[in-house]
Length: 186
Image (cartoon, rainbow, N blue to C red; front, top):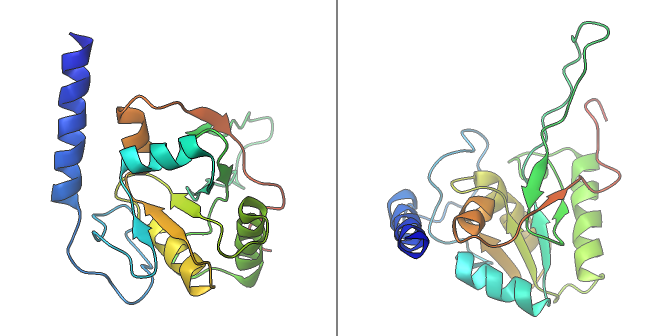
């Protein structure tokens, strides 16, 4: 029974990818409506599905970067209010670089992103790197485009993100943002 349910979930996932992706590869970064259908491709990067991402992850030869934004703590919370950040469950071994996938980023955020890229590639511009977020999330598309434009040679864009990963029952673990994350006002 579980095998049938899983097979159905996989079929729905792959059908959803076909329905959600547009055919055009935009020239510029997406600057709004980040949770929307994404293009099928990205010039300068290799687009991969969940099974391909899993195979790359299992081989252990690529750095994985999660670019899901992290909501800031509200500044107007009443004194004594307990604030709990929402945990992020992601691909094991991935580093989390919140907020680097927006269309326009501040220099301090770009520096944070460059630092994360250097960390996962060991400074080797030819080292493979996989960028992801959630399904139908332009933030990963923007981040992969930016990494490619900065000169990284083996960029993989994983548009299914952790949603596609989880539907195939691949492992997830809680991760925390990489140290040095810029704060509002930086």
